[in-house]
Image 1 (cartoon, rainbow, N blue to C red):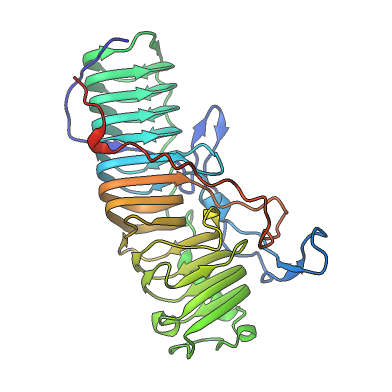
Image 2: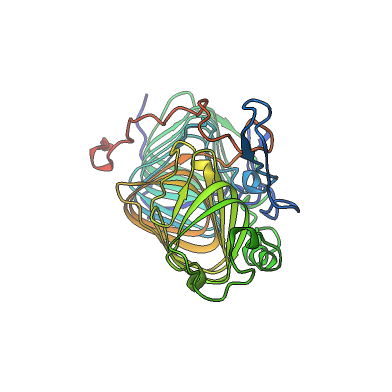
Length: 412
């Protein structure tokens, strides 16, 4: 393999993958569709567990839009700025992760994608970038360091770089090519195949209207069966709640207060306003249960989540309708779940590990982000939630940590 070196430009990766749009890989659509995120009518109920465990009752999940909204590991509707290391990996479900950003993305240090990276406005990286499958861009691709693509690389604008380029499949460039370095042998030149447009369709009317979903829950909910007021406007007079399958409306952060909630079954919680914090001390999700948490406003802090079975990150889905900054504070803990915040600015500092998927407005970081893709899906028992205690849980993720950015080999 020969070495290859190109022009150094400040890091700007623009990646485009379906937020609520589409991304194509191997002629297979992997994008996200729409949906209202609710149960299409009647609230979930309980029923017998498919005859597998006579005499016991388990919650009905009902139909929901989460699988469509989270078809990709990471979708950024506007810009991504990462100073540190960005790693997008396969999770326990072994689904291929894809990553995308509609705006610009700046990456400095190591980036590794175990799937396809589609960049609409261009890619500019000051780092080592490894893409296992395809890399596609409508704009320019500029890099300093090492750029390795396992399959095809399509660049609509100019391709320039200082370092080492390795493309396992076809290389198509719509503009000029200015490489100062070494290009690995075996690269097959081809015509540039243009993109149809930004794959993250984050426009109004395409994304989930979280505020509208919460507004509907104000009139139709299951508060009464849990002993809650139908339209709470003040603090709930309980320190702890156990919510079984159903939909529950909380008027604002004062109404939900600092109540600790145990989720048992398929539960939708609607908060009409802002929440200061979401984390392990607020919600407990029992094994086999699912929580969809809709917040019409903003969430200031998102902490790590703990479930009855931590190897089911699809159990928690957080939907944020606000536009303010949300801080993801995980540290040495793990956030298990999916975050849908197409208007919010999500930030993190230090090491952050997520097992799930994300759709965010902008993403800014200084540190290490590890995202292990696990998309919310219906279980194998149709629309039923998985019975608690069922033994056919997916195996835990491998314990081999990604490389320490400080220990990554330098390009000579």
